[in-house]
Image (tube, rainbow, N blue to C red):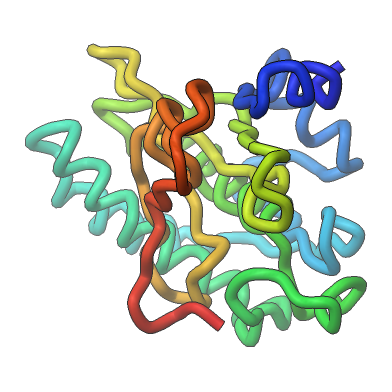
Length: 219
């Protein structure tokens, strides 16, 4: 159905349907079990390696998040730092710290490499652990977000991001670290500006507006 709509409208953007569990079920991924996560890799969560955050890990994340208590914007900045710390902690333990930013053919099926599905799922798992410990004051974890524009060929392929929802305004923010190396803070940007600008996507303007433009970490 989405492919038909994309052909008819020249592009499409859509959020994953249903509750967050639907995304995990689609890729046969395991949701966090308390402080244990199952780190996805091999592209499409074909490999899932368990990792448990210790009480000391949670204390460190809590310390990072405390710096963002003043406002939603400050909390998003703190969340970037917390996710970078959690991601690198897990990556180092399970063997994905050498993940090459973005995708490449050599990474497909490699347990040490991650595609956008793996990255988005892992970031969501980390945020669910944070939410379990009530570390968000201004946000909640939302369903997975998906966006594509098939007119662009390779530049418009289906792309995934985790979601934070600002409690007061209900603004959704995409959380995406696909183009970044392990230990780098992910981008957190309004979903309408993420990956492909919604105005361009829906109305056929020229060129994509890339919300993520890290200067040093692209392959």
